[in-house]
Amino acid sequence: MPRNPFSPPAAGVFPGFRATASPFERRVLARKPWSAWILKAVATILARIIVLGMFRSLMSLLAASRVRWDAVIAFLAADAAIVMSLAHAVLGTQRRAASGRRLGLVCIGPIFLLTCYRVIQLETAGDLLLARPPGAAEGELAGKVLVAILVGGWFFAFGFSKKARRSFASAPSAPSRPSDASTATP
Image (cartoon, rainbow, N blue to C red; front, side, top):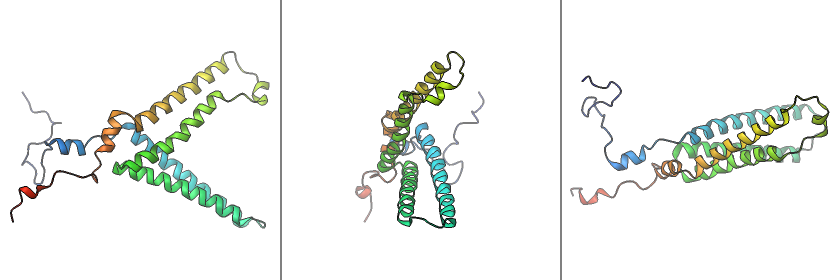
């Protein structure tokens, strides 16, 4: 039977390569859940959009003649705090830190609440004046409910699923193996 080309090489084939066999190493190398990758992508995109908006707002305000600088500084500080929390959530998720998991939940939470709000949001009078095909309102409601269910599933998968808990529990900064002091030679 031919050898599987996708299997890892045997130990000793490459210098410095060692197959992970111990349970500790398998736990440390646990795969990240998809929800963590999605959070990193969404948080990075949101941070870039917010930073770009901050610079565009600042440039337009510098061109204006009358500006309340105390309000401008407050808004810029709030935007900077949001960007820093998004960056910390991305880095904490990458390092599998508990704070990254908590900040990730804090980042996903408002998205979930906004999608739930859109489900229960009433149509405005302007929408009622438009000619809409029959069944359009029901289809729109079904789409909004589906998106809310998907974001709720993302929230659960990121913070509370078994795979996510195992992934975040295997942080490399966590206390590692028991002390090898008993095997060390003086």
